[in-house]
Image 1 (cartoon, one colour):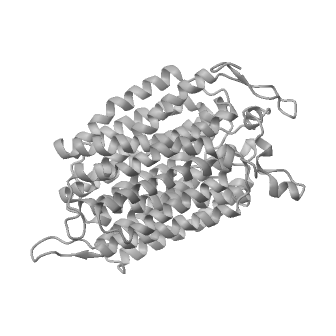
Image 2: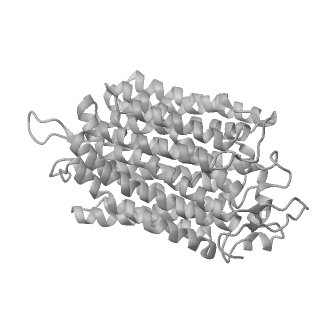
Length: 524
């Protein structure tokens, strides 16, 4: 078969209709999806070096400013499964274009925030941008040949590196020269352009499930529980860690988990596709990948917020850099993700998902662990590259453990849950780091404001190291689906290998049509 020619999948084992894939079209869509990942990460990445400037302008502490990051993710957690199901009902392309229009409006409004409260609310609405990822992944699963899926994972993982590599120096330069508000305005034309390209180039999904029910109550309970816990973590230092507000919000968030679990069980028994499907969570690989997603999300945001503040905090605690200097100092992290993402996407088919996931987790944890003892800026730059390499390898490998395990009709639901777990971890990572930096402070001289103490940074890196190394242990309990060891453990016991249900693109899509091929949200 020549490069770019349509690729026919093997006939489904149960006699389903053979599906023919257009690889030229797949690559065109791949470019657009890569652009979407890049621009969304540009909007998010450009904000990070400006957090201290935003903190000073609005007169809040480090814990409170972390809420600007977390509010976006919390909303994204609640909206992702809802928007994914709406894509099932009305068409993924239509919903994706609609999401991009809303996202452009929210980005524009955020740039005009007059105060801290307004910005937090605007950032919460901006969380709709996170739903771009699951909608895009659903299109990949439906329109890409199976052999392209691991490569697509690698490319999209690399785009995370590209997004940070572009956003951090460019965003920090714009923010340093013209103010952080202008960085938001520079992103709007690109979001609009990609919305137009999506409308013109991407085909509407042929797999619809018009009778799908949307779990609005489950999403509301999950978003509410997470919001209360994140708010308590972010405002704890300001309110007082033992105050009635902090303890009350934390308790309310935890208590909301009870009706969430009860409702999700009932919703599933009544035939609905719950956000948290405990039937799927009983499957080893589904549980393993969700736990790793939770761990990876928390570790990433713990380290990212800590590194930015470390570079901008005055000496002798930090390195006293400007917004631009701090942005440039984060480049090794982004470059490592950019370089290692495609490499991991190629190696995963040969080595298997488990070895690469273990390697990625260990490299990430080692980078965080050594950061506790690092003294010089050069040491931190080298360790950033190690962290970025580990994160990139982890992201590009572990998702295949999930995608190539679950049955076709459960694909959308399984990837939706994985996205929820990963984003829950991310939403908790930033406020944990922010609360540590707000709690451990030092005053360099009388009359000067307090700054984060070294101990706060060390605790952040220590927690990130522990959760990353726990991820390396967790993946050992998974069952391999790729590489030379795929299916070995199950073959010995006479059972099917985890990936046997998805042996071909046609099987992934499901010969039973839309009702069997879920196009719900996924994760990159």
